[in-house]
Image (cartoon, rainbow, N blue to C red; front, side, top):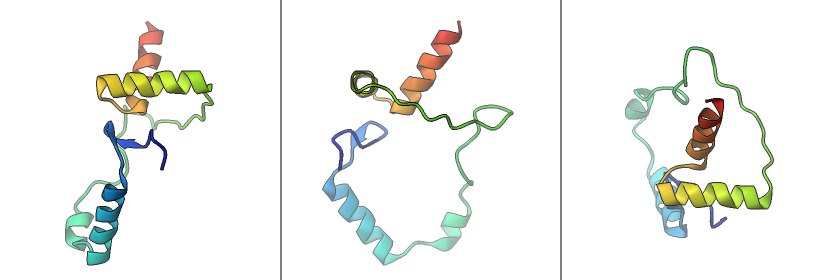
Length: 87
């Protein structure tokens, strides 16, 4: 597991993965799962587009550092940078 794998800024550990595996083995309440929404929420009226980007090692390190410092995901940091650049 990469040292940069996080969920909401929290590093994912072997303990997390073991707990998730145990939860899956116990089974899930299908009625509760069916009540959840489908997919990510939209960011506006038109559907979002997935655009592959290949940052350099230094750029990616800067994204992760800012995300960690601001307790955000890397996606949030990238979105904010794009919005700030539109001004």
